[in-house]
Image (tube, rainbow, N blue to C red):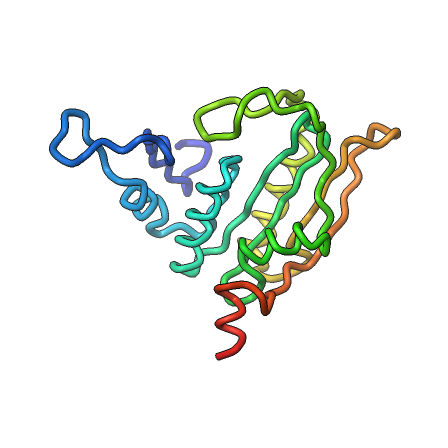
Length: 193
């Protein structure tokens, strides 16, 4: 606190996506919606590095409903690549637009190790192996995009795709705009209105 007087840290101990106990049972806890609602109160930016698609979609939807900018940050199996994507509600495409752009190859999917998964994906479990130093460029890019978003709003590209699998051994980045898609259930409806 002394070194960062304008930073407020509020810890949340609940694992989002975990099994929910029914109300009234011993150990019952808040729902994920309640916890995320409290997490999003008064925030300027949501950063999701959960690596779990259902949680990512939930976080993206709740952030969008509140009009909060969001970053989705992930690495691929074997730490061969990664992606940093920024969603600005009303100004860029949404998380679903990003998924469609990746599926349609309008934005390239980062390289990954086909045999890199060590167990099924999920918030509570290790999903792949990779070295921490390979993940540092992805984390650093996420910080750059977060700072630029907080300071400048909508400037520059929205999606950054990293390849760490090249022969040079140096990270290679490509930058892309996240456009709203007419086929998106959310953005397409808003575009038609």
